[in-house]
Amino acid sequence: MTPVRDATTIFVRESLPSWRSPLGLLFSMLQPLVFLALFGPLLAGIGGLPGGSSWQWFVPAILLMLALFGTTGTGYNLLTEMQTGSHERLMVTPMSRSAILAGRSLKDVVELLVQAVLIIAITIPLGFTLHPVGALLGLGLLALVGLGVGALSHALAIACRRQQEMFYMVQQTLLFPLLLLSGLLLPLEMGPAWMSTVGALNPFTYVVEALRTLFSGTVADLAVLHGWAAAAALAVLGLALGDRGMSRAES
Image (cartoon, rainbow, N blue to C red):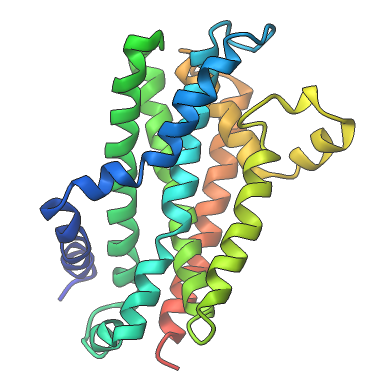
């Protein structure tokens, strides 16, 4: 089997449960939707948000939140398969380990994009303005983030396969500080100076700024370049660690 065919086989295998029960996709959107419904209206009363409209500022942040909540937890499925022996049976096949990771990651990215399109569709009647070219590039950037973070989640799951509770401890410990220190919910400039300093070291700070710039309709901007660079670095790191972990998962 070729790597492409292997990856396609894994993609279909991993996606079938979602295709058969699409309600699961909606439930996994619940947390970002709660933020959208309860936090979004609060921002309407805050003046001085970049971009003019609070929805124009907040919806790209919700899309990144969707990517973080969704893809950081995908390692759980791998842990479950390791527990049941399903993953070990897969590993004795002649499939390429890289193709297995690619197929799993592709499934995460497709689900993320479907959910992102649904979020955008929901927010347009609320006042969110869609700029098609910027939105398409923003979705591409979001897919790259999902690819990298999903691969990192798989690498973490493999590293924690003998202490599965560690997966959640590490995921939750890292997820919320990264989220809050990216300026995703509120501009970091509104907080103390140290938050802006720490935020400058957070790759998601650059991604969310790039998403906001793209979804505002501006394509050629330095913030966009920084966002793509941060997302590409995450993807390279995630795929490298994920591929290495997948190759060592049998030991």
